[in-house]
Length: 271
Image (cartoon, rainbow, N blue to C red; front, side, top):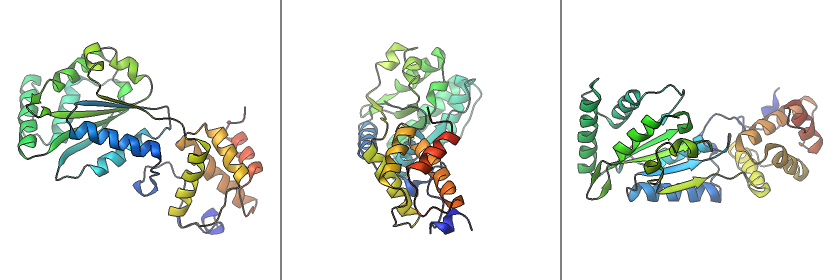
């Protein structure tokens, strides 16, 4: 027996793997999606989402991508995984994501191909959208200037491509490397930490998806989870997952504040 069976759960409710089924549509997330869709539909060009580590930026990016249907949008998500990215690498990634067929190693020719593809997308009645996660890693003035160049591609309806940047607070400093680009940010969203109410609803939502209708976590436990996690969804998941394991090992029918304190100690969250 493991904690799934003990607490009558169909699956692990607090995995940090991004799974749209567990998406919690808080008022903050709902507002962010609405604003980003507005920026895309009105072809504003550049929108920015900033949040601390574990605030849910990647989850929000995946959710937005899911909601951009193929009939009306040519959309792609690009995750920056290292800081030594060149503008040539980025251009090729954009070209691939947008469906450019004639790839060239020459940057000028490749830009021409991207422009023609963006024109085709517009002719098809679609909007081109590139979502980029971990953009703070692109700490390069040259790359920021290249983004500004891409945003100069316009039609009579507006920008030919929309960029949505997701990143840590350092993203503001990266954008400042090219002040004209920073001034082109049409929508700026700052993801805030979950409140105690958000935390309670978030935990309940994820348990419900895992087919649990019981109140496994006591009210005092939820208060401590909010305190130790500082409202970070990722940390909430980690604390709750460890708490369920701890509760199973000690055969506790509910997770109370003493269990949360023990888990916080183990995770190094107890000050």
